[in-house]
Amino acid sequence: MNRQRSSVAVPGGAAAVVVILSGWFLLTSAGARLQTLSCWSAVAVFASMMSYFAFRASRRMNADDPRRRFWTALGVTSAIFAVGEWAQLVTALAAPLSMAALTGTGLARTIALATGCIGITVVVLTYPIPHRSSRDRLCYLLDLATVVVAAGTYGLYWTVLTTEGNRAVIADDLVTTLAGPVVAMLTAFAVGRLYLSKVAPFSWSIGILGPFAAVVEALSRAFGPQLVNAGRPGVIFTMTVMSHLLLMIAAWAQDRSTAGRLERRRDKQRLPFSLLPYAALWTTFGLLAVTLVMKGSGLRLWVALGGLGIITGVVVARQLTSFIANSELLQERDALAARLHTMAFTDSLTGLANRAQFLERLDEALCREGVEVGVLLIDLDDFKPVNDTFGHAAGDAVLVLTAARLRAGAGPADVIARLGGDEFAVLMEHVRLDDIAAVADRVVGMLGEPCQLSGGELVRVRASIGVAIASGENRDAAGLLHGADQAMYAAKCAGKGSFRLADLG
Image (tube, rainbow, N blue to C red):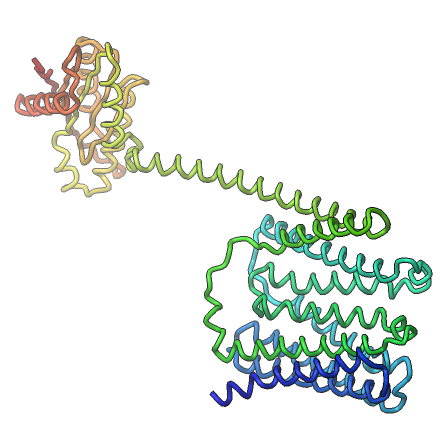
């Protein structure tokens, strides 16, 4: 408990220091030299602590965890930042009122920031993201583009807002003018790439602190000379210490998370889609609405309108991609349903209808009034000796050949089914007694022909067939099948290889 309180006291104490320093920086310009030294001393300490917490967080993770490599690399880049901040403090000690000291644009600090940013960008780009299909990758890139465009719109809007009425600033220092939107877009790309991939090495609450701090730092550098010329270097100091405090807190929070207190939240169920692109769209809508309320025309309006137009186009493309994917999924679902239906109602060996489909079709036929329905119930004679003598593969071959002969002997509209084992059935509609008797006689003859096995052996199986016809009011499926079954056994008792007609009374 004491260790936990001690850990919490670190960011709490740092926040208290920032509040005190910010009040001093903003309320008075007295003691400018001491303010400069205090700012860069605090920033150097925060950067060093950020590196410390990032390294400590990485050490708590498994060696094969990609997050460990991410936070180790972040610890290295933070250490580079810290070197630049300590070098900036040396610059401030040498000339506390110089432009480099007041704006944080010392050469060593600038080089360190650039090197560190490049390092972070490389880490983000090389962080492993799960394999995606081409369509998933396209949707992911479109979502990322939405976030990046929204961030660029806000960055450009802020730049126009701060330079509005002074067009010379834009013309004279285009690099400074574009710094805001460029940094915002790069930051959004870095964080959005990981967050939208759903494998971010940080939680959203932690990940949002870093981008926000980067934007604050970028704004302080972009408008530093103007603030110094206006006699407000305290604003630069405040923004700088706040940004570095946020970065330190982000690293501290990750260290606390990997220590176990927040790690349990990793298994929380996540949405199958991300709300971030939609949030980017609606915040840009909000920016346009605020612009119209505050000032109905001007460059800011066109920035907001242009950004909204681009985002809307990207979102439409994203939705069209999803519509196409959903359509293909529906087609796959229908095809799968058809295959499952076929599997459920088809005999896998012979390809004939199975018992379930035969009974379903029989019920449907009997429900049609005025239609005479006939059933042939077929049982193979002497089939068991084939299995016992030549094996089950030979028995299967005989069943397949029997199915082929039944297809040849029955009509194209008749339903032929294997009910199970060596028992088959044929369902006929619009049939008279003479017609069905002729079919039964033909089938008896065809099934009585010898069957040649794969080894060249000839086997003979005959068929006993029971025939029943439902007409008039006697249209009960169970009764019809029972009559056909009785007739089939009568045929077996008569010497096999024959058929008998059922008397349904």
